[in-house]
Image (cartoon, rainbow, N blue to C red; front, side, top):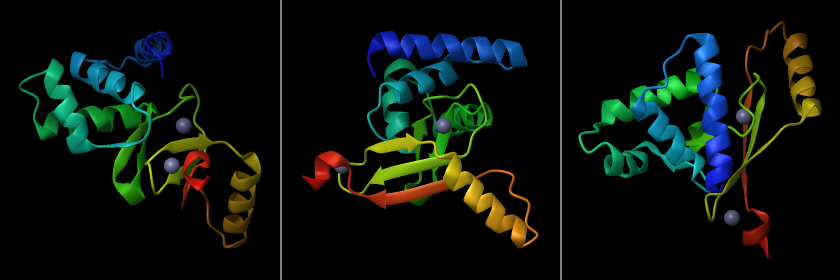
Length: 147
Ligand SMILES: [Zn+2]
Ligand SMILES: [Zn+2]
């Protein structure tokens, strides 16, 4: 993501926080910015290392609190299978999450397929199960790594 795009996302996040009465503190903002400049997903400790450049006294709780906040706001998705985090590219609305994760280079691509969402919701419904949120993580090789 280039700096212009990063700035656009930060402005959007700031506006949303304002509307929701949530506070995008400097540390939270910094973590958001680091994630925006990241190609793939990143683990909490790598994030902490990068955060220390801007906030030298940052500690693990700093990063976890910031990540919790960013997830609550829907700005960041957690990739459970690799225990890492990735910025959401369209965080202005709640949505089912489908992620394509490259096992080789770590690139993460978020896709949105209403078909997948509906199929899963329907099958769950047949089981009497009410789906509140959906996260699908698909592992494999990205276009660059396949060739
Ligand atoms: Zn998303
Ligand atoms: Zn790859």
